[in-house]
Length: 86
Image 1 (cartoon, rainbow, N blue to C red):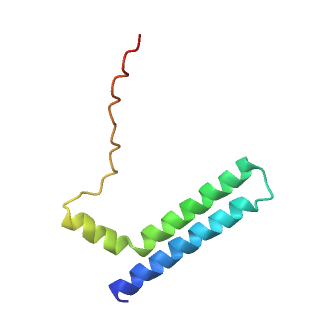
Image 2: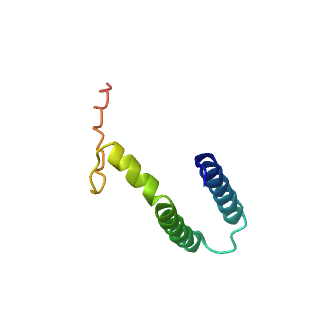
Image 3: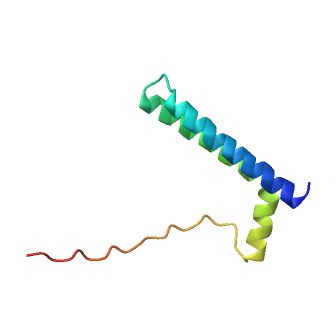
């Protein structure tokens, strides 16, 4: 499969996913908590499918950037001090 066609398929899939989520949220017959649980579950599935589909490409990028197989570290932003009033 050519690189351009993978990109267009990915874009179309993400656009369809976004449209489906938007329509689903607007027409949801269930409570918000149930809808959120279902949404989280579906996003985990999609994420897993994405990782499976593009694992070779992800590994190539990691290799090119000399990244190891470690979990990403969270960046902690320092809060700027609040201005004093009064």
